[in-house]
Length: 263
Length: 319
Image (cartoon, rainbow over all chains, first blue to last red; front, side, top):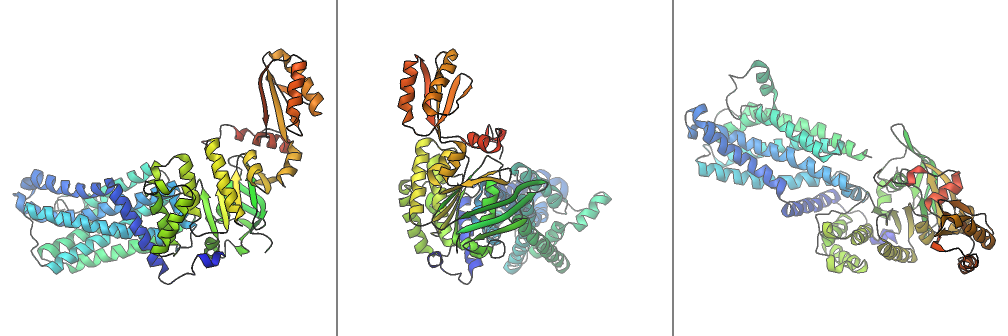
């Protein structure tokens, strides 16, 4: 009886289930755009604030500083979106029992996680388009070409996607949403600001310089800067890709494991 | 297969706490097994293991003759889960929730929509279908949870405290729905903290406490152990309690309990109630309160273990 009412497992199940859950997540973003708007407005606010407040002091002119800062803000945007939202929404699902409902269904165990990341990627897209529009209005111009600009976006999205799994793991391990939010927020500062994003790093104290050199976000900022403005790219881009892959290789299995043994 | 689901010597530890210390549960196809126990007894742990959400540390659990650990994916195709820990998405509408579950069960877009509407109709949610689940009342929410467990038309249902927190009217409504689902041939595992609920729905009841089975039987068998209904009399004048107890003893033939100005005694038939009121009249005991009730969970535990389980009181926030 039962076997006939639920069709036998069909091919591409994981992809279809992941997409169904992606659709669900996007519906929720539409209903409750708060977190999405946070991740959208924060970089725009940073861009405006840094350029017009500090631009003259740091680079001599706001135009020159915008040119320096924009690639960094681009990376920060995807890092913020990754860290702030994916893990948080997963945490909410677990607490409300929605994930248990999914886990009691005959779907791949990674489908809910993949669904979350896919829906976030769709949001990155909207965020990046907005950022380029604001940058354009402020006077930022891509000095290379559309292919390089797309590559810059892809690189930034890849890193954001990889880093979002930090919050996923934290979200799965910690039940208290406020704590997850704090952890994600604390993670933002060293990752996003301990870089050459805001200013050149040669005046920083030695310990901070060491961190900046390790920080994957620095490599991404350098690579995106090279891609948008011209200049050396290969080394920084390779480092970014390697870091992202390393994060994914470690964090994805870790989150799936933690998620399966949750009480 | 003899049983629709079965556990044998089920053990589950969380750190040093033993949530289940060798629990045997079983239900024949088409019957309802009530698992009765206070909060923290291990009811939810047992249901989560049977629903493949949790791995046991020892023992065996099978659903439809399939091992829940080795063949979890197959088991998930057979079951529907409803309860405090398996929930719907509050930000989605009732229909969106059910359609999503249909798609996750590979029904395809059109079938998923049709199935969602069937279920919304059946569970009296058609009018609220386009409203977010967060706006539903407690009773509607439980019905939606139940509908969510029914999308794949499972023949085995796990209902984890489906009526906790509902007012009596809504509870009776949900009981009727559950009875219908059973009448259609489904097997149900129902956990509850209420003897009354187990009595109303279950064919057999397993009582568990602190991770152990302390009794098993049909409701009638358990009530023999515990005593069936009890009559309680609270005289206006507390000094008349002994007098009231004398009447109860004479009519019921059981030794009454006198405490806190209330005399109570088990009665074998509710028809004795009129004899009791007549007796009280004759003895000129003015009655403030007279009640006939089923044994509470606390009575059950008192009868089975000889002590009142403190956790049956004020335990609501414990979980």
